[in-house]
Image 1 (cartoon, rainbow, N blue to C red):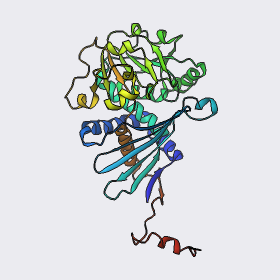
Image 2 (image 1 turned 45 degrees about the vertical axis):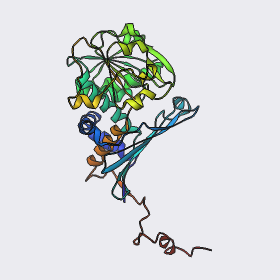
Image 3 (image 1 turned 90 degrees about the vertical axis):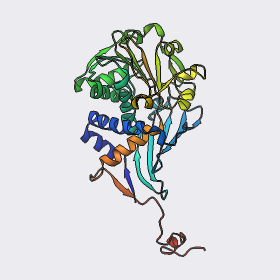
Image 4 (image 1 turned 135 degrees about the vertical axis):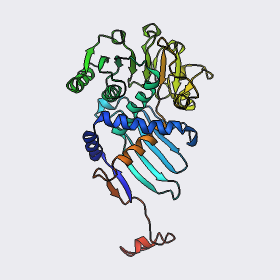
Amino acid sequence: MTRFVDVRNMVRWTAASGVENIISGMIGYLEEDFKRWEEFDKTPRVASHTSFGVIELMPTSDGETYGFKYVNGHPANPARGFQTVTAFGVLADVHNGYPTFLTEMTLLTALRTSATSVMFAKKLARSDSKVMAMIGTGTQSEFQALGFRAGLGISTLRIWDTDPQAMEKFVANMEPLGFDITVASSAQDAVQGADVITTCTADKANATILSADLIAPGVHLNAIGGDCPGKTELDAAILDLGEVFVEFPEQTRIEGEIQQMPADFPVTEFWKVLCDQAPGRTSDEQITIYDSVGFAIEDFSALRYIRDAVEGTDYFTELDLVADPANPKDLFGLLAAFAPVGS
């Protein structure tokens, strides 16, 4: 039998556990897996692009457990009543190939993305960071805000979105949770006095929502919106202002902000920072940039985390997903028990 966490149970578990508690716990799993980065199979995600959006598979394995996520990205979906991003994920035992765990990952990906951003920021943002600017207040924004409060203690936010209703939604969701929120008049206004800048827009376009002259010394850029070919958010000149940190360079060069740069543009793989093989932030004046695209090992960590978290609870059900006859060589025998076959 395969354990299954459906949407209802994911929501129940998240509400009962608390978003900030989950993100804090997930960071520990992420750090464990990033520190053993070299043990994993790694490949850029397998993407199918159309004029509507993209559907991707994100696989990895540590030699004991195999995991993958199915995820889409369709920027025009909200206007048609659909989510921009949906996902589900699987863990399997590599010894026999059987799937052991299946879960929705639309909500879990939002939690994972925030946890990964915070993991990077704990090493790359200034330790005295107090204010975060958020450019884009769509689906991911609340999770980012809660994550940065849990991980860095940031509760003062300056927000901007081209959609006023998205900002109203964000304020309605976050103000009751104790955040101090300023609704800015532009992206330029939003970044004034910010220690951390999170960019999270959905349009599948080579946009420039921030220019280099807006980035002050000492800022950490959490650039999470550029995540597929032809989709960027930052003025390319920003990438020359400081050190760029990435997950898996082979994927980020295809999908991240650095797709705008030459193939030999220098970047730092973040796992090396965690393993003390490369420096993170080196001064209070340094500009640091997390060029986020999301990588399969992060989903693997998130899947491990929820699998362990729901153990012994009622937040999962069992699925009879794999045909498993008593005689492994007699698959046909499963049919004979129910009706005559072959006619």
